[in-house]
Amino acid sequence: MNQTTSMSVENAAQAMRNVAAEVGKAFIGQKNLVDSAMIALLAGGHLLVEGIPGLGKTLLVRALARALGGDSTRVQFTPDLMPSDISGHVMFDSKNDTFVTKKGPIFTNLLVADEINRAPAKTQAALFEAMQEFQVSLDGVTHALPRPFMTLATQNPFEHEGTYPLPDAQKDRFLMKIVLDYPPADEESAMVGMVIASGTGAELITDAVHTVLDPAGFMAIQAAASGVRVDPAIVDYAVRIVAATRHDSSLATGAGPRGSLSLVRAARAKALLDGRDFTLPDDIKAVTVPVLRHRVTLSPESEVDGITESKIIDMVLSKVEAPRS
Image (cartoon, rainbow, N blue to C red):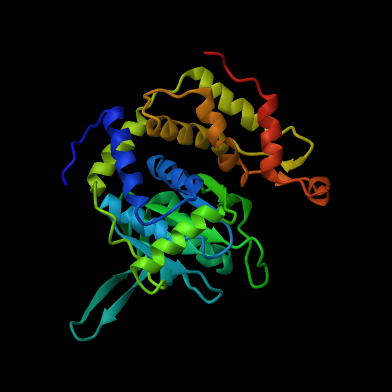
């Protein structure tokens, strides 16, 4: 399906509603995760998901890729995973007496990096470089990644043995962090019923999902999101929220300047999903916790008291005055 190179916000919002409707044919519930994935994609960012296994994260990515007419791959991160296992490598073909480039699984539109904290730092760094630069260098030759490109990385909050926690500088590369809990009973029942009706229950079935866009069409929607108006007062609001995290005694370190930029990027994407060509303070409020929770560090006292980053950011947000319309 060919899309125009420019698109109004109204048409872009409708196209994203169509994508969400198709995803919903294969992925039930977890609306927060679906919305966050859409926001991250629109903003050209990446998503870090913390939650127990089996919540359907890979199924979501496959359904989303199918609706967008793109590709998806999944990489299981392990302690012996090498950077070349992700990016690819150059090998000599003795039969043809030439060097051949074998691109790795990162050359896709939507990448699931499962249990990212199980891979060593060198392998993590290779992924984060690609996430930041949207390109990979193989034997001195730079290869651009397909666009759109998004990484959805997962980590298990309960297992720490054999893991390599992400450094703060690398966590900062993710636009948002979502913390998933068990689904409500009704959603879980609906999910189980749909899965067993479609097969043995072991497959990730997305046959019901129709392609309603193509990658070029989605890039036009991304362009529409980047054109959403942001009033200087909204920018100031985002900056004041981030600055407040740097002076809160419950935090050892606050968010950096990338936090302010990420707030505005995510707020623009949310505004487009709501069908608006302008941002509101409520857009900033809606994305503040997922955008900032992984960019701050708890103080030792907060850790002892069992206070979470999300709770502290909520309290910070309540103290920062929003601009009046």
